Length: 578
Image 1 (cartoon, rainbow, N blue to C red):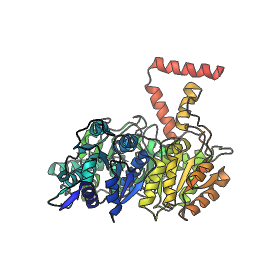
Image 2: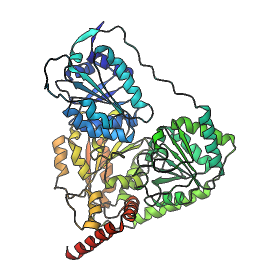
Image 3: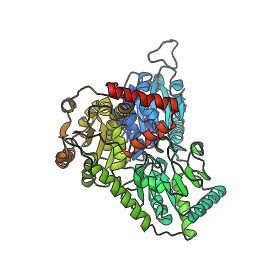
């Protein structure tokens, strides 16, 4: 049989279960788009910018069992998409990036978009391939998928020259995709797991720290925490790994930048079980938290072991597989714990922290705690919260309880602004029956707001909650104390209502605390009518989060004395002189 590379690509993507692609057609991939349009299994989606498409593909991989896939033009399409690809790379999210390429049968140089794309993406992909002939198409896509989804997941890049997409060649076979079987736990791993179980059993105050890598082990993690009576804290990306309405849930982070419940739990810990976390900068409050010598670290990527915190036991492998074996071992050892006192302490710490927010006077603006109280009360547990990068991220992490695995997603290690709006749109595409609510700062919103046109054109009912204060507040607040000025962090005045009109979205405004319930109710009602809603929230950012206060103190402590003196002196002078 004779087939084009475009047809073979469509076939291979169907085989590996791709359901959505995101991108923009161009002269180097129109044949591929035409084939995707013929597919009964794949829906190609036009985006307003390839960077937005990268965030959308990322979100698909986070909340579904399908891999997010970009189909973009070469060169400019790749540089535009780079932020979304790099976010997936640093956050450990699988993605396929398929781009056209210049003709590989031409005698001419300086072709349109001619660029060494493999060199371009080398720093932010797990692997990159350039297909040379038709016979390589299917096998390369299968190999790329396996690389993207195995070990610590990440994006893989594939370039397909345009002439291969257009021209037919004889193909001898169309192999079906066969997923590699998961290897059984080795004898040495079983020994490590048994040693870990004994270490946890002997601990007087064990604690658990869980990251995104533990999301698919969520139910087993709950059982482990109850068996050993352990409080549980999470990374930012792993917020949904452990339900916030469980009595052993303490919150986000550990150490000085954590909320009181998590801070107190880890201050007393004599053994920590860490699962699916790299102990990165945000997860640890700028590496400010301390951990005991008895650290058990489970991760699929061996490179993370001992990078920032020395482990007593390091177990490389799939978190779900290892946690299931650990739970069985603990039960076989007869481990049971009464965690009622631990739960009481956690509840008291949570209540205390919440009350500090209730006591804060937001004057004529919206108190974040009251907003999240009402949002949690109105949403069902299966709703999806999508956040961006900014001050609102840490407010959401500390004040919005998430009750279901994968119910919260955020850009974390690459920390790219502009993520939430396109990501929320993709989540709603994949989860049409579930509510999707984005939380995004006004600065981040303006970066990708044009993607609302995509949501409106597809009649996607979701709410984009914009925390609107007129500044890039996370950085503006960081500037205020040491500099007494806000350089390039005050945003130009933008009427979000006008932006709603321009994109066809609905608009709702929450001016102060008295508007919260009616505003949220109206926005959700419109979303349930398949309308995309900008919810403009006059947010009060005047009270700092526990994370911000803790991280600032940690970083100030680390500064050399001359730098510290210079910064403090400059701040005092400017405070006096203005």
